Length: 135
Figure 1: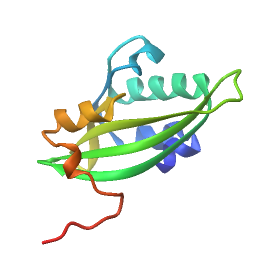
Figure 2: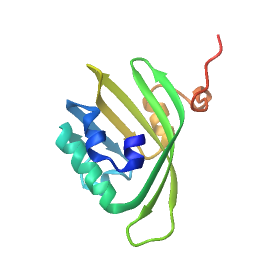
Figure 3: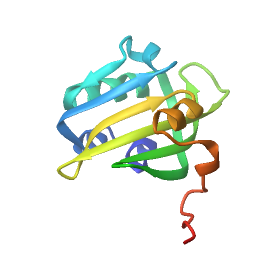
Figure 4: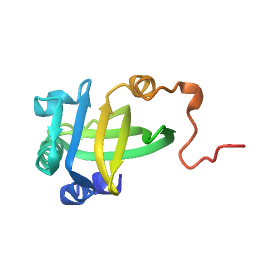
């Protein structure tokens, strides 16, 4: 999330694999006008449009959950739209898949509950970021 918070588009792209897919589920698709972006160029285009739309972006992960071979991250996001002084706060959920040490797929949900359900989890599985699971 550091690269996103810093507005480092090339840093974000560097973390993705050559066949990466970024799927936008919910309101995010309106920013770029499509729901699935493919490859580094698609990811670059999304974040270029994102940072043109929002003058500030801060993502604070609050929960990390393993869902099989995927990682679910629930985050608080605060953005300020171009031409506005009022920040907007929202909660999102993202499901990450990895291949060869890089991000291979991200499903980004505008509604974190939908992300939990898609990952086969529930709110009962939520733990604060950095929390360790008991045995």
